[in-house]
Each structure stands twice: as structure tokens, then as C-alpha cells.
Length: 359
Ligand code: FES
Image 1 (cartoon, rainbow, N blue to C red):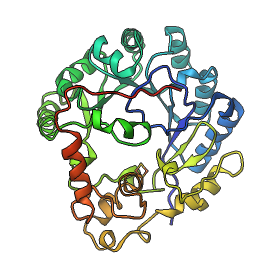
Image 2 (image 1 turned 30 degrees about the vertical axis):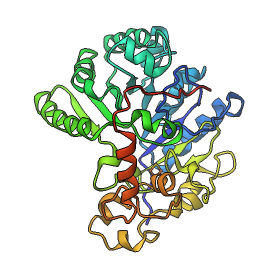
Image 3 (image 1 turned 120 degrees about the vertical axis):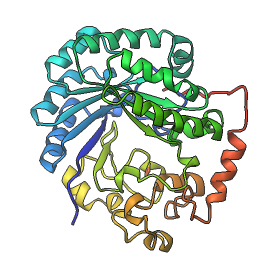
Image 4 (image 1 turned 45 degrees about the vertical axis):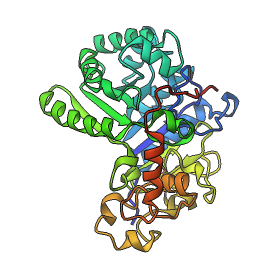
């Protein structure tokens, strides 16, 4: 029995003014000319609502790069979807924000690249980006739009954790998502520069614990620890094909953000099949759904229904084998691959050489 999805990530565009080295979008980006048009997206939102999706995450790239963003939000709300805009804030203006608010936009997730202009503009590769972001954050607060701050942490900024949480409270966010960088897509080639050290990660965990208690009732802190330092893999997507789906800018439907890195899978497109057909019967969705596909080690593990076999894209990225046990798992015979990477890559490179993402 396959349940309907709860959430859909609509990657409206790959265009983005920022050039973050930890971008998890694929190496090959979709050009503007290949993006779904307004009508396509509206149809996808209506199909999603009929399928059972409750939450729509509008993302990118920078979703504000789409001229029809307002129209899309109006259509999504009309379809009955809870709408969450995941934005860098750059490209939004007070007027656009006002229109989105009036259209009923439910929530904003604002990404931050650092606690001040110096570090944020360096990481985002966009001079003046921090100031524009702070300007729009003030307007979000003034309009009382529910706000979550998204902070990707890595070796250069993980020591600023407390200051990052202070900033979230200052900006009126009720929640902060502190996610250690996930190495997918473009981010993989910056792994050596971004990988935090073990000492940093241990300290971060202590800080998260203490700050969560201290800020209880004011700020909810969601912490995503770095995979490579964990003993067990994350339950990626809450289990493949179980709760969510992604639609890329050209309409390809993916079980997870990085699924296109798995060369053995084929993906359907909303221009050719209905969302329902893809969700229930698409070969990519069924490839790792449930537990039948799991290697014997995962099948017999007490954590089988906790981490659902971990992350297939990680097994692909680190071992070249999407069917293998996630090498982050301490029971995996390939765990030494991860340990070696962490030792080599996180050890005191004073100067990091960031490779920026440009369209
Ligand atoms: Fe694809 Fe984890 S990112 S399964």
C-alpha cells in the first residue's frame, strides 16, 4: 500500500543571483528556455493537491527569478496548498513581498550565508547580497509573515552558531534550520573546503543542546548534523518515495533532490505523465520504495524502519553503487571510505579554495 505524498518541492528555476559553493543543484543546470511555463506549473499544483499533497515548497535556484511567482502562489493557494517560499531574499522587493503576502503566502524560509556582510557575501559570491537580504528580512518581520531562517553550516561558519541563532531571533524568525552542508550536486567538488572538523562538529552538538534549552518557547532549532560524522545514515526523504516528491525546473519528477545522479534510474516528466501515475507507478519511485530492495545487512537490521536504508544518492556518490549499504552506517563494510575522507579532507586547510556556482 503506497500512501500519497505529503509535500512537494517545486524547483521553479535554476537561475539564482548567488553562487554558493555548497549548491546542491545538479552539475548541469536547466536553462530558462527549458523551464515549465506558468500553465504547466499551475496544472502540476492542481494535480498535486488532488494527489494529496498538503505542503508546497517553492524553491530554486531563486524562485523570485520567475516573473510569474505571484501568479504561481495565487494558483497554489487556490488549489488548497500550504505555500512555503524558500528564497535567498535577493530578487524580492518590498512590493513583491506585499503582493505575495496579500496572495496568502503562508511561510518564508530565508537562507543566510553568514552573520555579517563580509562572510555572507564571500560565501554567496554576491557583493551586497547580505544587505539586500537584511532589508527584505525587515519587511518580512514588519508584515509578520511566519519566517524560518535556513543556515547552511560548514567549516568556515560553524563556529558562528550562537551568533547565527541570535540573528534568527533578531529577525523575528520562530524557527531556524541549521543544516550542516550536504554533499550533493555542485557541493561535492567543494567538499574539501567545506567539510567541518570533528572538533567543530562535537562542539556544535553541545551548543545546539544548550541553546535549544535556553531558547525554548522563542526559537525552534532544527539541527541537521553532517552525515560523515554520524554512526548511522539519515532517513533520507523519510524513506524513498514515501512522503515527498521533487519537480525540477523542466518538469522532471524525482523521488529526491539528487536522484538524477543515479544513472540506472529513468525519470518521467509532467509533460508526458500525470503526477499520480509517476508517484504510484513510476519506475524511479518504485526502485527503492519499501524494504524489498535493501541489501541483506539492512533487511535484518533493527534500524531498518528507522533510517530506511539511508541515502541512495550518497551510496552512489561515495561508492559508485546506489544499491550498496549507505557507507555512513557504521555497520557498512565501506565505512572506512567515509572515515578516510573525513580524516583527509577536514584536517586544517587554513585557506579554502571555493569553487563558486555560476549559471
Ligand atoms: Fe537521494 Fe538521499 S539525496 S536518497
